[in-house]
Length: 428
Ligand code: HAM
Image (cartoon, rainbow, N blue to C red; front, side):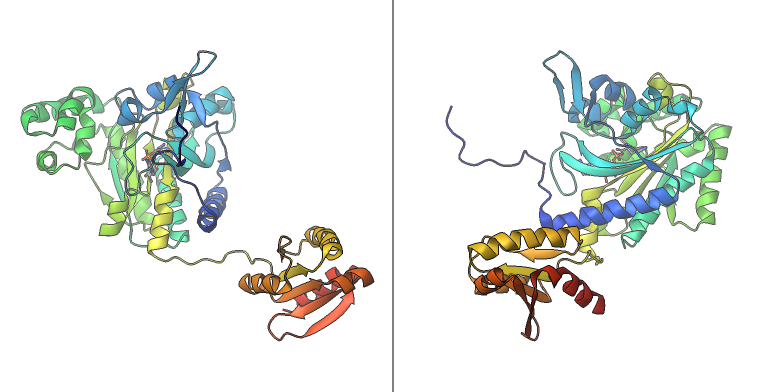
């Protein structure tokens, strides 16, 4: 086989390079802080799960399972898939680890990479990161509002503005079959005017037609019967309460009767949060979720009502960058260690460890020999002080502290330098 000239990351998958790490860190910190405040505890599930967990949990007829899942057979003959989302794995862990026996609701959050074989485009990748919130074992409508509120608060904490919550109720196993029939009748009579994808959906998943973005389908959809007009009494009451809670906490929502979402496990409330601007909409939904009252049972657990949502980290970061959101990054080293000569390098290596133990951040450039080059590096890093260990100092057991701004220098004993620097830092 011919040798490959150049390797590239797989299509739709990206390295997270050092300049982007601060954004990931910031989003992680905010999610952790807000979720913890609301009593959510962290869970991380494996990147791989049995393929059937997703075909059963998300639904055989969904785009995710039909077209987007990365599946393979292991050497041992198991069928596994890279997780395309985090709700089914969380429900699996909830059942497997006996969390039904804990005080309910069990509130969990997660943060990690997910995989979908999609056509890469703006805001759409094959490996992407999500944060997720899952509250299992609570049927009260207040948790629906709370998950929406937490998702919204996370985005607000990240300084995103013009956020809009779109919300709908898609009913439950009592009222949805009847609605589906009505919708089918309506759509069948207009089948020839639908796009190719929707003609396929008509047979396998007619509800999904409601959020088709094709113009010709949009015209048909605008006249279609709406779920909220055909909810059973319980679903109507539940939805009314959710909206009342959202009013109470003054969240800006818009009732979108065509919002259905792309996963089969949803019942009743569904929601999405977008940035309400042309650029924001082009980026896609930032957070999406809803209630999934049947999922745990469907996967073999007890009847467990649940509600959750997940946000796309790359999309959130893109929105932050567009808004030029600024945030404080933990301060980097303000001290730099320069050395000249072999002995100084050896002693410098040891001294560096002392700074680490003292938890004082310090920069170095041990690979360089020229003092000029090292001081230039110190300057670039924004160091206030450079510690210079020359041949003479290394022999004498001393070190020079140089104030990078004024150029003033003083010599101190090597064993005193950590204490001396600590004093200097306290003065600032
Ligand atoms: P989802 O709407 O499929 O829901 O994904 C949630 C969010 O993940 C999206 O709103 C988007 O920001 C991001 N996302 C999805 N696919 C991609 C992609 N290919 N590239 C970049 N970002 C993407 C779920 O995954 C549900 N598990 C949410 C949930 C939790 N429902 C209840 N609990």
